[in-house]
Image 1: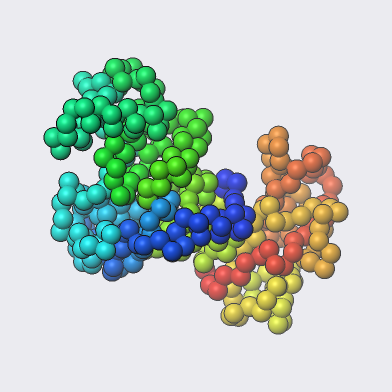
Image 2: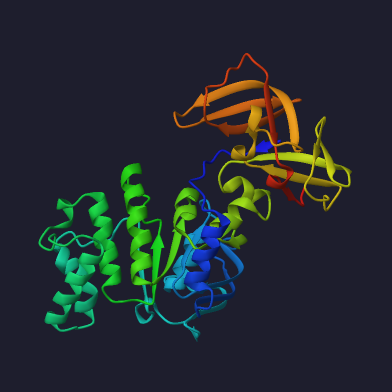
Length: 376
């Protein structure tokens, strides 16, 4: 059995995410289209991005999620125009912009390091893109005031960047990106430099801001919790390819493969062999399946929160008595590691603290386990 080590944030229900996605992007026109886009850097053997096809619609909060080296930032930089694709076509609003320079695209980017000019006041930093376009000063002042109000930074116009906190600098960077009313806002790991509390605060700011102004956001992150909490849809990338695209609930509850299952949150992955029409042998344990297995060997993904304990074990489901190996107490819940006939399972439960000295009854509804048609 293999087990991932990441922790998921609260996941929206399928009803919530489905309604949100339909409201935002159900009939909207594509803003970004990547058609067979690849990027291979000089003196490298493997492409950073390989044959990527992607459509992002107007008004979406779209996240590109992956670990370091997955190709997510390269993808963002190609959309922005900072990198040229080796092959393929990039369209913005239906127009081929593959060879169009960044400054001619209706796109703005917010970087992790803010990229504020240290010698300029907040007002001048925010208004700088408009000054470069030779917008009249009176209009710049009005638009700067409006942009700062959107990010709750009114009254900071005369401060310099070194007089701001990390969260405040991030808000100013957002205001500067929004002041030109772009069709598309790209955010490259924008919260990576902030501490946990500031990140949580900025998550709320970003989500509300995108909802209120309606601009398409493309958000690059390695943080699964950020992507799950904010996105309408998520593209999970690995080794330059998209492993799955879907709503947060789809990605979490119906992963396409073991990589997605393990990368998004924590899961238990059991190597299984088909035993009967709706049963399988996982090690020495025979379990009931919700549907016939697609192949003789496969993986079964079971989320820790879907494993029930004691009287909460569902009737008619899989039920076992196990030994408790470890209990990690988090206050609001506890993470429990158990031994299921030689296999380790991790589960989460609340209520009374469990003991490692007493056997425990556990089980799960077969419908909550996801069959992955692979045996690696």
